Amino acid sequence: MKLTNPEHKAPVDAAQKKAVKPVICYPVDDLKQPDLAAYRAAREGWRKTGEVLVPPREARTFEVPAGHFFRIVSVESPQVGDLNLWAKANHAERFFSGKTRALHGTHLSTGDRMWSNLPYLRPMATITEDTLDWYGFDEFGGGVHDVIGTRCDPYTHHLLSGGDYHHCCHSNLTRAFATATGRSQREAEPFVHDVLNVFMCTGFTRDTGQYFMKATPVRPGDFIEFFAEIDLLGALSACPGGDCGAEHSSDASKCAPLLVEIYAPPAAPKGWAVPPVNGYLGIKDGFVPR
Image (cartoon, rainbow, N blue to C red; front, side, top):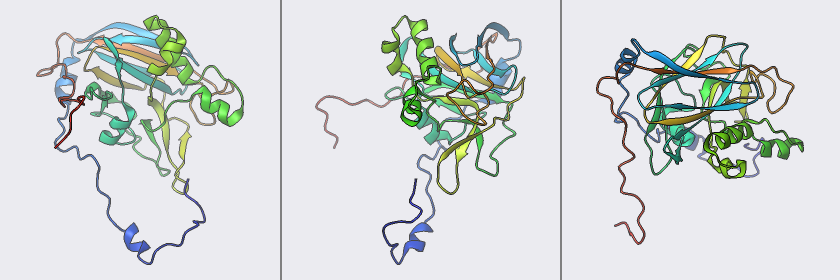
């Protein structure tokens, strides 16, 4: 946090420096946009091929073939979830929340994509519908579906409270990924990564710049829908914070399950193809740039 009382005197041109207009770091005008009309047309005649119910304070994995859709659905009381994605055939390729945030902003919605980490950097999934798109940003700067929070984890919990809690989303995702891949939990843990906070309402305080959460506006029946751009292994944790209106990483909050639904369209969207990995030639041993 910034100091309330700075230790160093502002320069005489401080106001001028603060008045400099910001520049968008990653302009996306030339970034190829998804053809949402084609994606949505492909849903006509789709069929549900599977579903996974994620219990409260636990995580479960699911698989989605490239060209299929999946939804995360609120089924009972308000509940947030933490989502991880991996390329099914290569778990080293995983969701990159930081670059997704740089390209699409702090909170995602329809038309935004979940990008994979370097050196792959390609779309993993595209959001095709979001029943909470009406929320936008509230008077506190809060929005839904953020890529700014990392996931609740037992290490930070221990740092701040001194206790051990084993149902943090990091722990849940680790156990679920270990079970799905046949790895030990110790082997699985490094594959767990920063998340898309599904349904979570978050922002930064205006005065101190601190990350905050507030009760999610999600209602039973609300969903966020994705199109799988590549073959995916996903993991979703039903956060122990419940609606995240008070606290997380505890057994005190009321928690509910979340439902993952998977749908197969009769045909791929018109003009769609699995995106290739990033075309950069890559870091080479001995290479010296000119």
